[in-house]
Length: 122
Image (cartoon, rainbow, N blue to C red; front, side, top):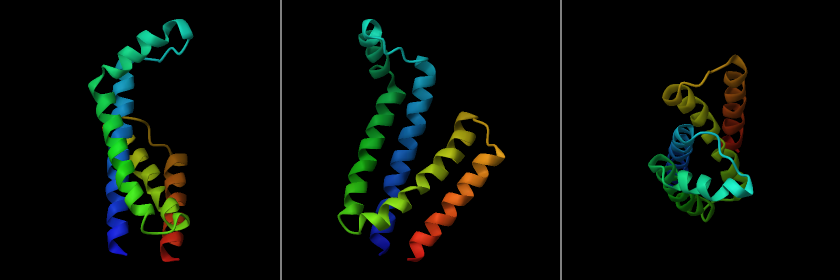
């Protein structure tokens, strides 16, 4: 059972890092305007931002590891464990992006961790 868990942690690490890079990159691009007339220039700006491209690449890489996980264990077991990514995104957003870590977010993270423990023990 160690191999799927290790694969899951790698998938989460790639995905969370990718999400943090997407946010970092889009903060440099600015608010995305998805009006039809401005869509092409917006997409060019987005896809020429290195952090965004790296973020997409890492999320895709994490997806490959995720496929490896779900090929080994039931989805009903693996998917709740994937929610650990929420915990790491909250912590990473606070540590690397300077976002506010409120009491509500901390309580939410603790609830998620409790759920992960319950599923893991099953």
